[in-house]
Amino acid sequence: MSIIATIMNTTTGRPIQKMKFGRMPKPWASFNLETGELVQAERVDVGKPAPGKFIAPVEVWVTPKSDD
Image (tube, rainbow, N blue to C red; front, side, top):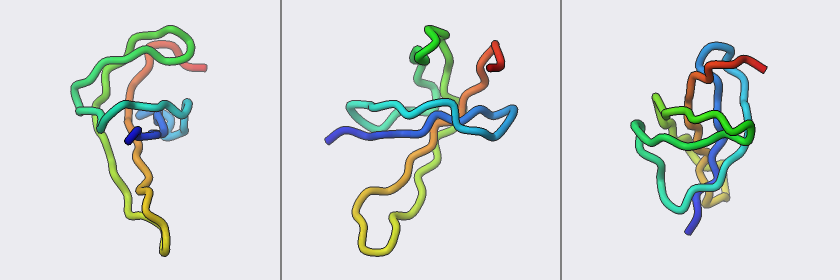
C-alpha cells in the first residue's frame, strides 16, 4: 500500500507538492523534489482520518535551500 504525503516547507508553512512513497517515510529520509533539489525530511506528521474515511493525512516537513 502506497503512502501519499504532502511535502511541507518548514520556513513558510505552505505545501510544496504531493509525493507518493512505497512505505511510511522516516524523519531522516532524503529524496528529490520535483525541482530536482535533494532534501531531507525533518519531521513526519500523521493526522487523524476524516470521519468515515480510512486514509490518514501524512505531512513531511522539509527545508528547501531555494524558495519558490
